[in-house]
Image (tube, rainbow, N blue to C red; front, side):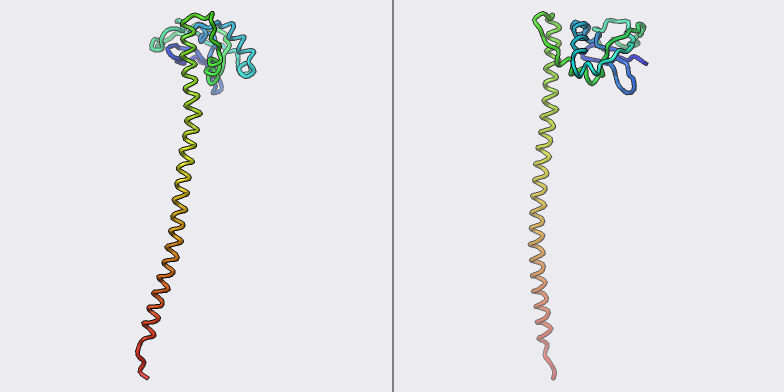
Amino acid sequence: MKTELVTFYKYMLPCVKLDNVVWVAIKPICDAIGLDSDWQMKSISEDKILGAERAEHTVQVPNFDTKNRAEQGENINFNQGRKMICLPLEFIHGWLFQVKITNTMKEETELNLIRFKRECYRVLFKHFFGNMRKQIESNTTEIKLLEEINQLNENQDEIKATLKEKKKQLDAVRKERLNNYPTLF
């Protein structure tokens, strides 16, 4: 089990990959943005969805403070293996999105959560509205194409009728021409 770092805003967070699932340790995230990790672990455990997804894994913790910027993460020595509560990476944003902002939080923590939650709202809007907009555009294009096909079919019917009429006229002209030859006897 190899520990890797995931960049979360300006923070480098340790995670492990097992069976194609990236597990992110909760405590380093709490430390990075200023949340009470014990309270968050309790909250995660009590949550019906997150509680079912959480797991304990041994994570090699890098030998620097997780508040260091991502660009300082090169040549990191992972020298402290610790058992930590982790969530799959796909659940981290949902967990953070539901963290309540309280009056007792430090201003930096509150600002971090507000910034993160605003981004979550925007991403959710773009995802759902973007899909709806794409569906509307797709439906509009489909309707336009169906109308054009219908018009072409109507034109085709008109063309076939006109063609049939012109062929009748041509046959009549030919028949008349052939019937008007003078007879010798």
